[in-house]
Image 1: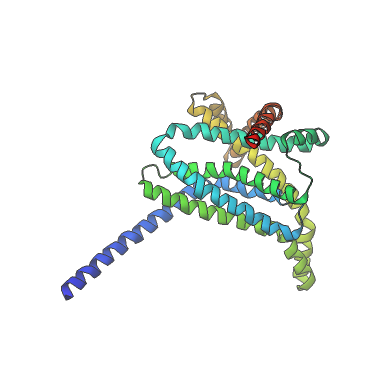
Image 2: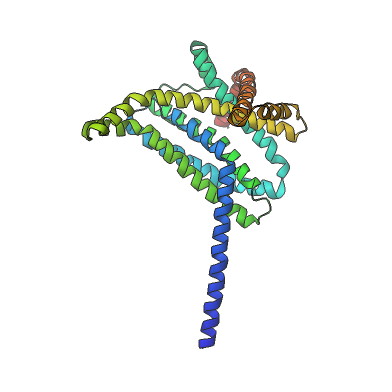
Length: 317
């Protein structure tokens, strides 16, 4: 009996060591994937706060919570199984889908630029694509839906980058790493977004109840947050154009159209360090803006009417 018990304990110890090694492996792979996806994660954090601007303070955290839950559903219920299926059975489909997602980001970013530069001309466009509801609840729902759609594209890029770091792993390891990265990035991004959108409320509290130095910090937060949020909205728009353009450029390289990718590489390496990165990002953003500008009339005159016709047909069926 004693011998059997000792053997059992030895087996349990062996299993524990394997499990610990697996946990370390998952953590290492997840950290590596998160580092590679850092650019997209930053873009996600910069894009999201603009969907909350303009709402009452009481609605800010509920809106962020809705978007975060939608993001988790995007990653865990849709993108994770789709990524595993495509990796196993149709790896050739990943690049075309990413390019379509990149084009969507280009359109979203260019539409924001269009609204900023030609605000009066943008209103008819919004009406045609159904993007300007007047009812506050409908506006909130539309903003949340728009944020989740944009998050879906960014999440797809994050999951694709993550998958590319574990291509040699078993399907179970791939699933675990994808799940860990999905949850960790969602918590990090939307935790940061929640802190950003509530910073002005924290400033009010500090200004009202803190010491002299804290009151000064509170007043600074209250005074500075509107400008910070406007700047973040600009950064978010630029990020969508940058990421969207970069996705399309890299996708074209996969299809053999390499001249634009080579130009991006040459520009990035012609300047040192951060300047090279900034030049490459700017070129990707210009490509994204051009593509998005081309897509605006296509969406308005072709895709939006087709979508409305499809909804009408489904409603009549």
